[in-house]
Amino acid sequence: MKIVVIGGTGLIGSKVVQRLREQGHEPAAAAPNTGVNAVTGEGLAEALKGSSVVVDVSNSPDWEDAAVLKFFETSTRNLLDHEASAGVGLHVALSVVGTERMLASGYFRAKNAQENLIKASSIPHSIVRATQFYEFFKGIADFSTEGNKVRLPPVLFQPMAADDVASAVAKAAIGPPVNGILEIGGPEKFRLDEFIRRGLVARRDPREVVADPQARYYGIEVKERTLVPEDDAKLGKIRFDDWLAQAAAQIPSALPQPTGAVGTREEESHKKAS
Ligand SMILES: NC(=O)c1ccc[n+]([C@@H]2O[C@H](COP(=O)([O-])OP(=O)(O)OC[C@H]3O[C@@H](n4cnc5c(N)ncnc54)[C@H](OP(=O)(O)O)[C@@H]3O)[C@@H](O)[C@H]2O)c1
Image 1 (cartoon, helix red, strand yellow):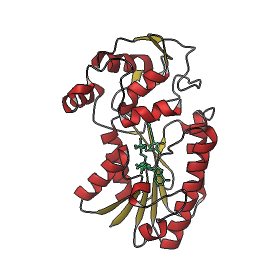
Image 2: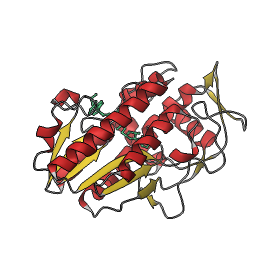
Image 3: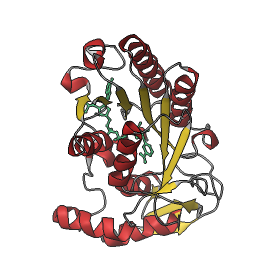
């Protein structure tokens, strides 16, 4: 089965491509640096020719309110139009748990617009909503840092590993369309402050994490259950402590980073959003 993965060179996309290939499918990674641009439409018709499924795990390079809205609206419209012309039978997109509860944020208004375009289209679809990725714990801390303190609301948080997200997206790509939303989350629930504290301690980051009910999450107010999925969500297998140990083993130099050191690509992109 030919499956086009839009954003197939990114954090999630590259893992989705790998899983689909391991399962004997023919995934094609599509992104600007492979000559496919979902916003301008460049290369889309050619890339989608003969494909049964399109998986959209792209992300906007610019998270300013108007820019991110334009990215998700334009790219999603372009993809759905080209899919209709090419006879694609399934559109899978990755969104975020709680999107409709965080519309005070421009990023989530853009994800909401993306979801609504997909729901209104004639293409059979599955929208996978994931919780936050473990990979972004330092980005969350950096965003909420003042001096040596990280202030975060002690709300429920159920993050997951990018590997588990990719497995769920790959599974959705080869399954039947649900024509609605599938929620996925991590295997453990934390308090947001506790999760970040645990990550920073593991990285020997000296910042103090303070539970502050008035603090915001990425600039928006969140309630007890804003960030967690419903009880019927499918849960990933990788626990945070195991992920931390594995990440430290893979990139030993990442462990004792002093505060302010250059982060990973995904951490940097979260910084950009601020
Ligand atoms: N962060 C979270 O915790 C979280 C939680 C749930 C869901 N999500 C969702 O997960 C998705 C994937 O995130 P990620 O972290 O894997 O993203 P990422 O690593 O930043 O990768 C983004 C991908 O999109 C591609 N792209 C950028 N502009 C494009 C364009 N005009 N046309 C086609 N492709 C384009 C990039 O290509 P280049 O490499 O060529 O730039 C790259 O392959 C996002 O939609 C996000 O909303 C995130």
